[in-house]
Length: 344
Ligand code: AMP
Ligand code: TRP
Image (cartoon, rainbow, N blue to C red; front, side, top):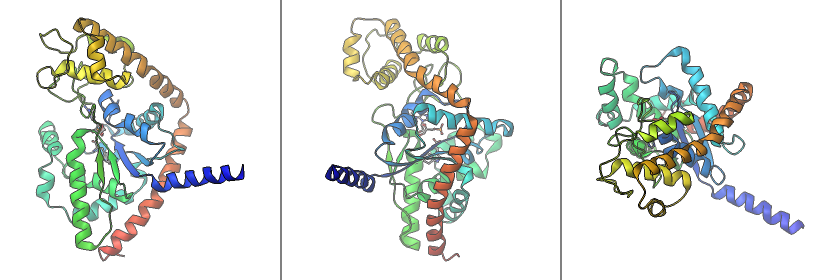
């Protein structure tokens, strides 16, 4: 018996020693959609058991594009309850709101002094968002990736689960860490991206040439909390092609391929098996089956969110506990970064 306890203890310690440090975040900018869920949140839930995870509500990122000050706290609360409803467990990971740990801003300032402005201007997301908000291109929008680099580097994260659209920002983070380390001495861990093989980018249902996005709250995007009737309507009117085959072809059949990806992620079946299952059936049947699968898969998340919403004290207190834990790690990294840069 004693031996068995010792072995178990050893295994627990050993697993902990071998676990990877993970950091990721989502902006509290309104309802999250199934693209965010598949590209990011779903993966977080899957890895929280084995890895040493920090998941953040990145509110300072949310204010880099126009927003309503009056609804920001509600959006933060909504996203924090969404994390838990999707399966994030605050006992297994660190869970907090970015602005509660001021070190993010301090490190972003220090890193900003090492990053050439041209690198920031080249970021695809900066270019896209500048076009969208032509009359409000702020320094905050340009500096967005510096803050993201600070988020990741503060916690010595070795890996960052993200959708494909954030890959460029992660490359900038890596370059920044490498440049800093070679100029000021070894300070930061160089992080790797974790991008899902499947569903790295979920496309809009109405225009499968474009990625599903929060700003597209019409027919193209499905919120994680969309009501069943609306899921059915949006799926049934999803843009497909004039062909008949339910076959994956990301080049020529973007709409159907996107639906196959969504179906595959939620059913855990391979695309090949789904193609076989629906061979000889029409697009209408497949769209209906995809809608039904989504409705059933999202139901428990929707129900859990309602339960968590009834208990805001619990949510805010877990976030505060998480911020206290995060701050301890952030303070250590900041000390090192300051000293290496010749500051006190
Ligand atoms: P954001 O809402 O921009 O903060 O995004 C949160 C996470 O969702 C990031 O990791 C993104 O890469 C991911 N994401 C956003 N849109 C999509 C999409 N259409 N498909 C897959 N992942 C996405
Ligand atoms: N920029 C990310 C997005 O828009 C959100 C984000 C901010 C993030 N800081 C991060 C993601 C750190 C991963 C790690 O999706």
